[in-house]
View 1: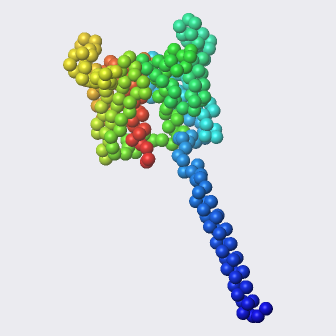
View 2: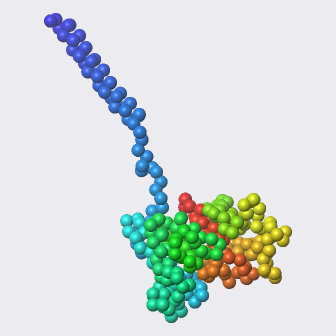
View 3: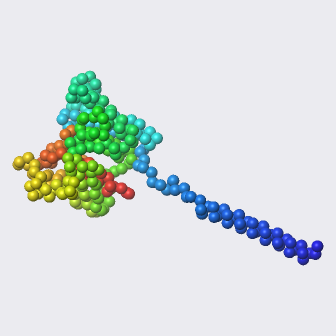
Length: 291
């Protein structure tokens, strides 16, 4: 074989090797392009709870008792939640109910048992999302619970916020308009709160409630079709008094609420404020997102 033939053969072999390499590389590249992407790491997870023990206490007593919730988080999960209420002497309502000194309606579980049923519900669901509550602070989401759960819900929200690192003070509020609506109607009305934030401050807050036809309770009360006890401010006026209180204080911190959902923190307000407090809290949480 001549040297020229050898060079041609060698070049042919090299060309074949290069073509094979190109085909292999192309195949690998095509597979990588066609393969389904794994976006697991890019998918936002639910709110992560930081391991630790967290406690929240009511700022003021209600009916002689001050509520307290303690929650323990391990591995990012709620593993323990204890709800209690202490009298002026520091005696535990859990203990008093267990020894028969704090009694419920005959046939109902003790206060301690009901507190534990609420805690169990939160632990099983790892949130408060399914713990619905009506305007009077009662729930039908947990069988056997007849107590007012407003205090429990508010304190549990607070410890969950602590565990998730959320901060709802006015200094972290993001400018914008935010609205929260009740998941379900109560007594035929669905509550709604709209908050406007400008320069990091709450500048406007509107509380309303709509019937099944979408008619506003504010309007109905202003024209005398939704009436309060004679001599009391209208529902619209009371809603505005609550809003004014929040705007002046730039928070809900001073808006105390008792077991029946009433407050003595705002003169002239006799309506149940449970819905207002819950919706305002939820809206403030929205304003603090993405900080």
